[in-house]
Image (cartoon, rainbow, N blue to C red):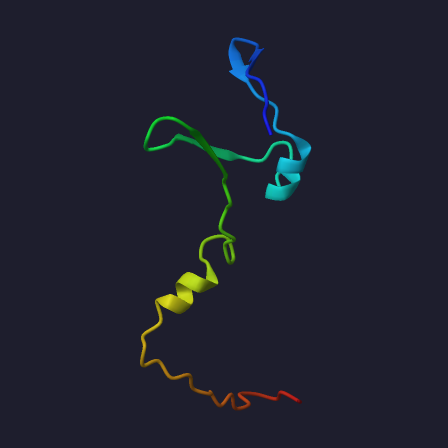
Length: 86
């Protein structure tokens, strides 16, 4: 698969073929990370995948990893405190 570098305003750009976009599950407007390969002979594009937060700040995976290894869950007895009818 080849493409051509073309002028795009004051810059240069390429168009990514539809089969490539489909294979990578990319849509127009997807944020991409752009970097030069260590050998400085290739451009590496990677989609920026945001980690899904839990309630806006924490990920469940991070919370579970932070639990002490010897953690034991316990049940609590919630007794009636007033005139509750269950």
